[in-house]
Image (cartoon, rainbow, N blue to C red; front, side, top):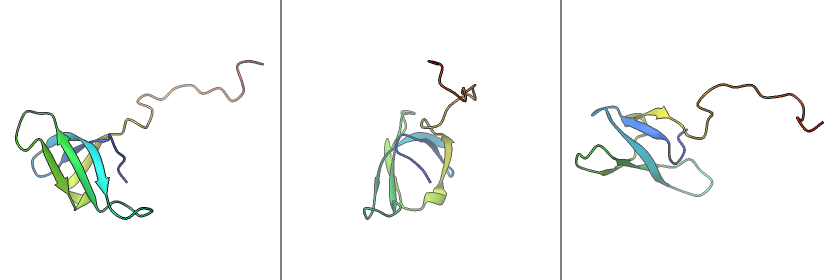
Length: 76
């Protein structure tokens, strides 16, 4: 499942862009994704109804690097 602001690649063209919006029925998975491309080529924006045309490159909602997470509070 993609999230807004994910960096994705259009598999057919290898262009990378950012997921900008999604459409569909509230409470259900989106049935359309809008991707903004920043590579200077046309089109700068494209709608995708088939999620299989996209591949996730990076999700900004996940930690980029693994790190140490203390098991207890550091304020004790």
